[in-house]
Image (cartoon, rainbow, N blue to C red):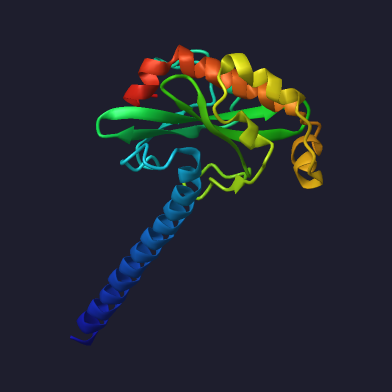
Length: 208
């Protein structure tokens, strides 16, 4: 009888620990998603969406081959990353596409570029590379006045931004501290726009 009672107590303790562990994991996930959501919303115009772009997302693989997406190499991704869709009602208004600019040595800059359905950039941001393969809790936006120069640009205008000087010392370090140049970043954003145009229908359907 005592052994049976002890077994029940141990079982209840195990169930309780598992339950509280589940609550803890759920709270951590919610915290990471809230963090990403606050940063992601910087890329879309207020009032241009009524969905949750963080959850209305799909994975873009780092590999160069995919069943439906083409020209994946233009993004230069070093690991799988999410693309995010902004919708108003049933209409897609913009898509945030990930990309990586690298110098061919050891330096790289993680980017997220929001493009509207006219092919114009709504926002381009540098994302702090947290070195994590997790899907959430990774959108730590680095504020940059220079990156704001890309807003409202199309493919025809974008390369001109690469010749605009970066005047802030801390911004300069962000881009050239690892041999990354403004032109490298501009070229990758241009490539991301080419990727967007090549896959517009697939991206709008969220079938990456």
